[in-house]
Image (cartoon, rainbow, N blue to C red; front, side, top):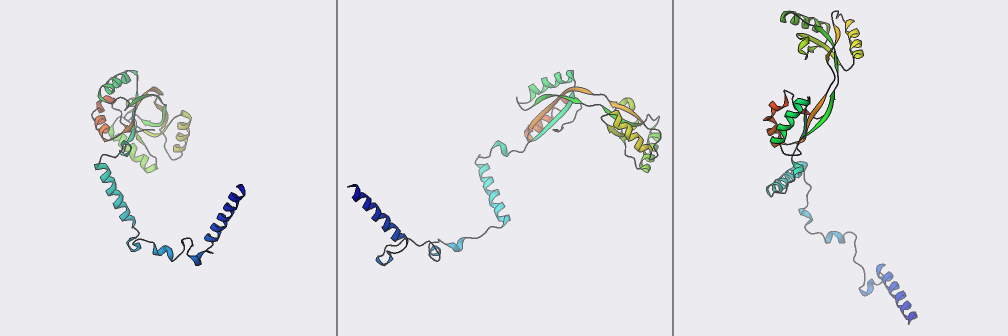
Length: 229
């Protein structure tokens, strides 16, 4: 019995091999031909196929997106958001801000983080006793090609900062550099001491949350919202 089974398997393999090679074609037994031109004969309306231009492809994608949106299938991830922050706030300011945000905004839409605002040293000119004297000094600095800005420390105003630095040593180097340009009466001073406190961060601000934040501007103690660092 086993010998008969083996013999049948051998005959079956031999028959398949002969069929695959086309040996049995004279008796009508041959595999389907998968080469040209037989493949062309099996195509269905090949003349209907054409390549889309980039503009046509974008139009189709936009229409599909519009239909999906109308059907309510768009996800929250499709809504553009931005990360915004404001600060630094001292302890008293932070307490007031936390109370306001807990009342006005959804939970999880904001967070407070500890932060350090480094000291700022400037190359300084001032104080000037009149707006006329300040304007005259601005003109002289422009002629020398030296950039400047108004000071942010009210105790130093009216005055000009000719550069801002995190260390006194960096400011001293800048003082030497601009002295070579003809600036004679500038000096190095600290415009701002190091400060520690909290910043408030809004990690995912969409149009709705932005509208709510605009209504809370007075709660930010005059500190502007800016892109997260």
